Every structure is written in structure tokens, then in C-alpha cells.
Figure 1 (cartoon, rainbow, N blue to C red):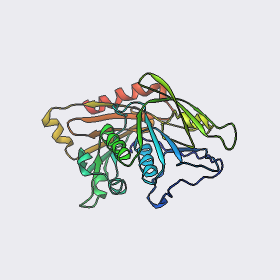
Figure 2: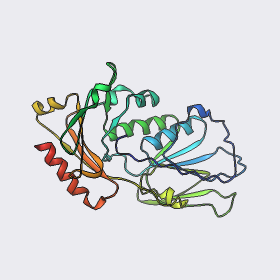
Figure 3: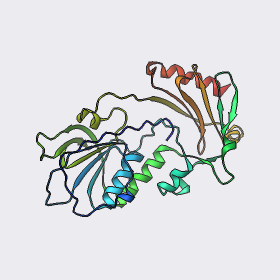
Figure 4: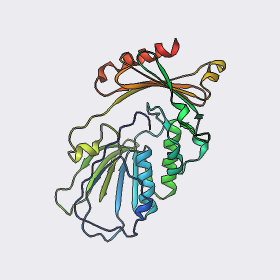
Length: 282
């Protein structure tokens, strides 16, 4: 996904087979992982996946399909992440996504340099290729529903704490709020796909890592102006829109997504967003 940073953390404590073996050829790697597994179980392996984005939902689907008792936590199922939403064509096949999720099939991608030199990267596409533009809330909802169909228990809940095992054989305890009530869930494995401020990463003391902050707006244009973006996406480079990242204007179903991001200068993100607004509106 555009502007999405992936980080991988894995911690194992002992080994334990699930009651039904998992065909690892069908597993998709999650974003961030933490695991504590008791050495012997008299029930199914129980896993909590924290974060219901593409990585978390795909992990939950694979685990549930393999016979693992899976709980998928997402605190807000209706929010739209400030993500450009441009996905490569190979992802559609790899994740078996229906084309109905794609808002626009972009065949022209221009990148504008700080000195206003424009390069058309769309020329590198084969005749049958395109860049798929999706809305994250549509994609994420589909993947969560598919995980649920595979047997995952999808919870709209906020995970507030993860208690790590005090001994080698002890399980994890996930503390969460659901429908205003505080609840607990004991699990053998925790998969963290909960973003840059990951509670899972903090719980296992994963250490420091860099992350980006993004700001995006959806701007609805008149029909005649939307025609300009029928098959066109734009990316901008320059200190006025981001000192270390890029800004984008990506077309969606009835609007353009206009945004930017940065790693090194997060405090100035609103200023950079005003910069890309000026570029776009001019």
C-alpha cells in the first residue's frame, strides 16, 4: 500500500502444534508478530490478531482456515485510513481480490520533481496492466469479512493492554474494551498488525523504529475536472510538500485523494498538506 510502513517482530516461547496442521504455503505474512506458545495444549491453538487492516485480516483468514481458533480485533471498522490506496496489480492476484473493489484502473502515473520536471511512469506498463486505486475502508472491510467467513471471530473492540507471560508456559492475556465493557482474553499467540503505535510492539519491547505520518483529504471535483483524472494519478516531490516523502493525487470513485507524508518532520504535516493543496488547486 502507498505510504504504509511494514515492520516485523517475532518472539517465540516454546512450541505447540495446533489441533489441525496449517498448510504454510497458503499463509500470508502479517505486519508485526509476537508469539508466546505453551509447550502442550489440550485444545486448539488460540490466537489474537490485533489490527484489522490488510495484514491483520489476511493473517486471521489464514490462521482460521488452518484450524486455529482466531480472534481479530479492530477498534474502528468504519474509519478510512489516510492512505493513498494504490496497490500493484500483483496484489489483486496474490490476495485474490475481486475487481469490484477497484475504483479506478490507472494507466498514467506522473511524478513531478521539485523543479517541475514531469516523468510519465505509466509508459512502463504493459497493455494489460494498470495501477489499482482502492478506498481503504472498502478493501479492509472486504478482507475482514473474508476472515470472518473463514472462521475468525471479528471483534470491534479497543485493545488497551497486552500482558506478556510471566513464565515460559504461561499464555498472553489481552485486555480490551467492547461495547463499553472491559474484557479479557487468554491466548497462546498474539499477532500485532496495529500500526506504527503498536501496543504489541511495546508489550514485547520491540525497540525503537521509524514510522511515517500521513495526512490525506478527499476532494470532490466537478465532473469535467474528474475527467482529467479518469486514468491519471500524480505524485509530487519537493520540500514544499514533504522533505523526505512524497505527496499524491490519486483518483477514486467520485473524488481525488490528496495527501502527503513524512518521517523526519511530523510536526509540519499540516503545512505540507497545504502545500499539496496549492499545487493541486493551481
